[in-house]
Image (cartoon, rainbow, N blue to C red; front, side, top):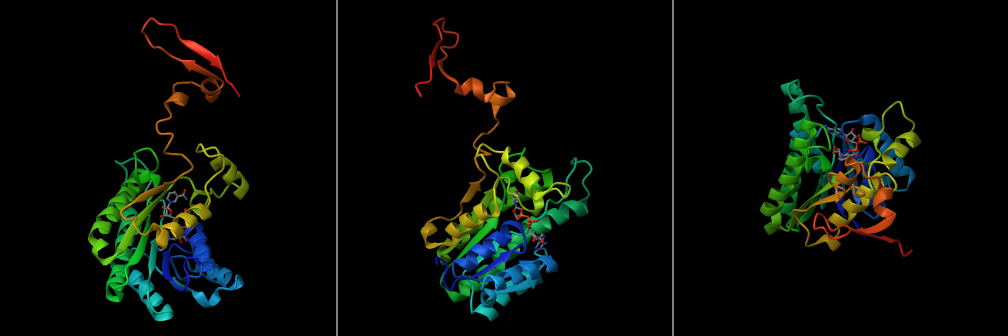
Length: 291
Ligand SMILES: NC(=O)c1ccc[n+]([C@@H]2O[C@H](COP(=O)([O-])OP(=O)(O)OC[C@H]3O[C@@H](n4cnc5c(N)ncnc54)[C@H](O)[C@@H]3O)[C@@H](O)[C@H]2O)c1
């Protein structure tokens, strides 16, 4: 029970990786406020928590993270229902505006940034107010994305917003360290959730499609993010702040993947060992694999 009696607010906690984190945190002894826009899935998440025997430790509040009063109310509920706050996971998100930059409307851009960036700002702000008043520190985790780390991993507005979340995380960690409030981000790669599950595909088909997206031979799951969030809020991560940790099965490790794009199949680079001496005039050599 790594989170015994800790109190957490999890935005976007009614679905996907947020729900997986709700379930994990409850199982680790935490008391959790599920804050989500979607009341139907929120009710289902609460029913699931009750069925698992954690009904007394879970609350749901309908919350639009783009509305400051809603986020403040979610934090206030944690305090009134459970007596304080130790953790906030600012995780709610949407795909936002998608399309050529010259076509995007201001309102679409604003919606994207309101949910993905302003929502995280509100979460940090209101959790911090409680943390500072309590005087016992706190842990903040924000969901960014690998899309925030380069230009080719997501829609333009989404990528810009997630990059903002990475920097908001770092800047907030600097401001809040004196109060022993740690602020970290998670940058997921492809995780099978409602966001990455096209309606026309079965869950198994969607999972099989994502299996091939990164070097690791299976697709990412909500539990992978829940486990990372658990580590980041736990005492084991007590000296980690201002970090944006990538959880992507090697998706970004493979970088531009030039071998493949150059037309070199993996088999060709893995079936023999070669020493290339370039244009030195000295001969190249090839060795059979030892095992
Ligand atoms: N799934 C992926 O591959 C992936 C990759 C990188 C980052 N992310 C990010 O992970 C986070 C969680 O996404 P997910 O994949 O679990 O998606 P999901 O759609 O399964 O869950 C997102 C949850 O956020 C809620 N939500 C959306 N807008 C909200 C708002 N304004 N206020 C409150 N709640 C709101 C939704 O109702 C939903 O329950 C998001 O920030 C997303 O951008 C996802």
